[in-house]
Length: 447
Image: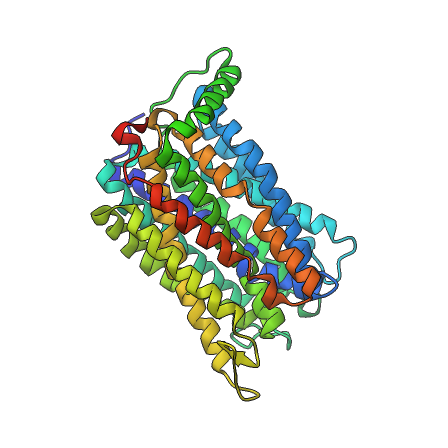
């Protein structure tokens, strides 16, 4: 079979970002998470706590398995069967969220379905990211990664607009268009909102097709006896070498903190807006569209800045912007902005939170895209799936910390605003560790 031209391979790779983004946009952040906290869980604070512990547990499992699976895949032949497997997890978990009825009893099965989808999302990304080095030269990777992330944000935004206009119901039972949810969904049973799970599953099934058609296996290796043992042995060798590779070691540590802080913002932003500002699903959705628009634009701009200046300046700028956002969020409630009281009924808190959404989208998208290319620069191209497995480990090794701290702080104080304050410390730790990261660490003697 003839290898597709470079442009087609790149577009196919981009379509994976487009296909999987609704899980982040619709389920993890803007629609399902707030719905779960407000309508499925006993109350918003308890919902934030339960959501946090679920994210923590799934994060621990992903952190343990990601580098092992990556190492085995690098030694056991084609990656495509693995991507098919994780796609099945994604689709199954998302589709099962349809059964998350209001006041569900027991709630645990809703959280299990969500976790299954998260495993599919996160493990699939590891294997697909490992293909990035085969798509272009090192100088092109920043542009390819940034444009792909921006394309994914556009997909997330479009899926969110469709859901808000035609499916997700407000308190009055109508969508953003002022109509009842399509397909005869019952507003009283919140069927329009629950439909985001099957919608995300169907979206993935349709739009992942170009990836499988246009992106070939990069330098496929035949299966060999003892691949699992060899993969684990080489993984252990790589882990033991990390102290002798200070740039990679610092990068994995720094990204471990700042990506976890970013995940915390995405995971709890919608829940926070529901509980603290009293926003409806529609308002949260418009907030999400704002974040997606700025995210798409700045992922594209950040990719070009990455190609010109390298990923490190882009990463540092993104971290600083997100620290500022966290400070704005924890000092803003319905009654105050930046700790300054506002008049009852003032829209200033809403305006401030929409501004935060725009900054989160811009900083988060450019930061994530640049982080992906930085991992390529730091890693070993021959063991790239293992490298992205370690990258996933670094992103998940503290995954129990952010949601756990948010859950614990919320549980202790009963205050959702104070619950998100620990995210500031995670960003600060990541910023400090970036000082020791060399833009081409693996190229300049650290391989």
